[in-house]
Length: 457
Image 1: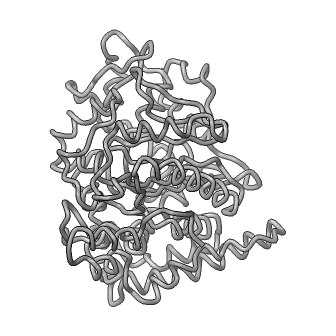
Image 2: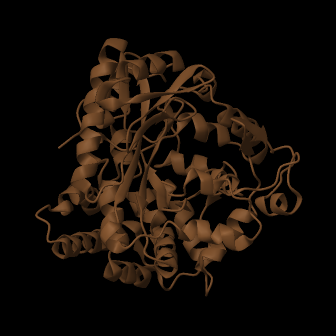
């Protein structure tokens, strides 16, 4: 959701303050704040549950070209996505289908776009024998049986991730998540939201845990996706501890990003692979690469290759939720909006976690994708915390509705996760309870659990 102009992005970087200013340029006055939802879905064969081939997914995109003014996006002669006026449909490395929605002023706008998208893709998928699953990890297909999207960016990342962790390619090809993009007013507001969003990361993992399977079997995790991400590349994933330091500001985020090794830069329409050099952006500023010096477009591209739980690009992006069944998909955005767009809610979140230092927070975070709502938090559990957080989110959404003098009640989008928090039983645990019998029976359980046939209630 970068708002810099293309000409501005060609500006040479001669001062670190330019990198700070690039992020701060994302600030908007509160009356212009919106919410953007990025929603990934797994694409599988409707009869077997195996990951669909890229060729079949390309046929799906071809069916959508021209509908609702979608324009094709090609790379190297292959169809890899669709571009609309304010939104896009793109493919992740293993063919996961993502709707990057427009920046909306309310969740009903997000839901309208999501429902139109679901209607379109389900209609196009039926004759192709394809099915969409709102699940955080491919349920049946092993890594080697999933096609790679023919995109140069992913070829570079694929090779590099073989050196940085043991599950980087699993992340790229097997996982699917939901992201929420939010605005900030100024530097202080941005840092406050980044810090609170990091505190909330284990709550989001626990509430939205929906990936208990890997290669057709229970994995031992409720969010296998969380475990996969943690074993991808420690330079660029997880929490950012320095954001919790006293006096943290946007320069803290800049410093974090400066010290992450770069994947590539783009020049004359092609990517130049930098992974052999393990060159951080800080070194690139000082030394250049292949005769090129840093420009703001390089910084923008580099920011897109960082994958912490909360990212700044320059809008704030929350990245901790698994892909969900259609009826719960917008609950992630509702929770984030209710909490982070409300000053009182953010203050209360800080109180809930104030007794824990960074090491304790990291431990809660690491346990959240294994134990879900049963994760210990002092003498309590993440389930206890989640129930308090949902109350705060509802109150925040009610206050926002009152401040906007709106007739739209956005708290309705929290109803489904209220029930999860109250019961203490995650979606992942519910799926595991049905995971038995033949392949056909397990596929039927998946379809009932998280299959897309409409956008939900």
